[in-house]
Image 1 (tube, rainbow, N blue to C red):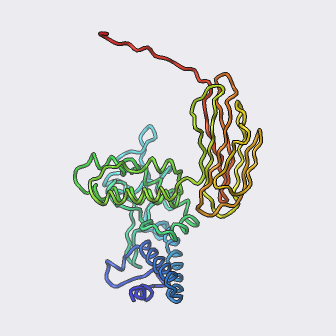
Image 2: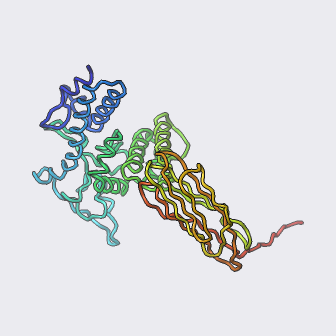
Image 3: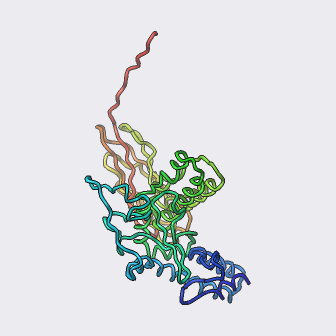
Length: 382
């Protein structure tokens, strides 16, 4: 019955559900998308085919509207409701701070990323809500101005897929523009230690959370870079703990699908190096090709793969494997080499890995026969 209220409230002229009463009527598009997806998935689980069909139709309509709303701010320029604004620059080319303060031409709006003029094509602002006549556009420069990314919250899997397919470049531009004045290290950690008014305990963690989710799920930024941006494990309130745990769970769910490592960072002539290549399957054919690095000799028959699936081929110059690995299943290939070089040398091992979805070139480096420096110990009063 509650879902039927959403279906009945859908307004084709707006592209989303409009209810009586402003608090619900202005319910953001992301929340409506999340609702439609949840109902569709529950209907599939319960076998309610009619509800599933209704929810799927509503979900697709809402996703189409979310993509269309990306042009909401550009359209404001087209009809003259928003005017271009020039950024003032200092003599050294940096942005004049007056342009990010109240009363400036920007009025607390985001400064475009790598642009000197905010206009139709460079304005990164996003519409927060719209009811067909009234609207609010948010893109704050101050770290507590608006505590979430407009149009990206909550971030359901269906909206993530559509954003990646249709709005990837705009999303990247929006995030970069936000980080001009709201860097991750400020929102995640520093703001909680350097401000004392109290609202930072709620607003900046929320913004840091939505930024992290968009970077991880939509932009799919480098895993190691995302791990570096997790907030420090210190808490001032339960919301901060909750968002940090959600970001951590997201990061763990996106654990690297292909990795390569070596057991020794430095080694001498005659020592053994063990290389490990791991990948997570996608259900398609995966391949590994690893050339034995210069300055080493392969240890015969040392190559092993776990689990023992696919075809493993080892030789004096090349280790290779190919096979179909079940989606989400883990595979690890290891092999050993002996250091043969006698002079200082960087042993760089490179492997070409394809998990069935993407190609990666992975490297692992060991410094062989490194020069050693011994410092004297000076003890006073001995």
